[in-house]
Length: 159
Length: 159
Image (cartoon, one colour):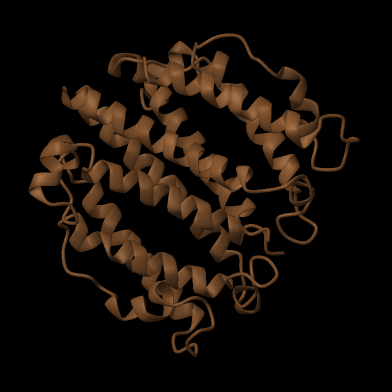
């Protein structure tokens, strides 16, 4: 395996670990727990599931993997805070959407070549990328991995 | 810049972003807030600062950077849960230790060559590393970056 492949593999493994840990926490939570806030007055777990599903779903076009699977989640789980809109998606359906999105991402990540990881992502212009080549797909992967870990840490707080 | 260097730089940038975000949250917190729990019955912020300082301090020998700066933190902040031992270090001193450790790590990270990132870390044997070369320094960096993000997400919950 080339050094480049080792770097790419290590990053994908780190993504899979973060997603795996989140899945473990969610799998252990019943529906009652999913309705609880991670701290008083803060987001409910169910909101965070929808939020992670929507944010990660945006990676599909951003990283050139494909069309979005769940653009309908943006209004309730990105554009608005928790409880601003009535719940119209069950926690079970949100978990399903999150799994679907993360599985599709992981399958694509495992096929990216090192060169593809260093290509620009779709939210940066060719001009800006020429000035700052660190705005590549790998940077997005690492940033979203941290994002998953951040919210998983919050969900872990709920008893 | 070679592709290898781009991968290494992207990962170090992601570490610096996670640490920077944590620093921003801590800088905005007064001493009163640092004594609060991140959720009812969970760790206080001050404990998490000590915990992150101690865990990251362990990276110094683990990544071959140097001796530990704060091994005295392990008992209270790794080996025992919050409030098991009396507070004997002030939140201010813990913040200072965390900054010192993270600064030393970051300075070393910025000097590692791509090849050095792919070397084994000190907690894996040569035999095990031969079987699984993904147990390299880069894997540790990404894992600890997620760890920082996870606890920063918890600290963010405190009003």
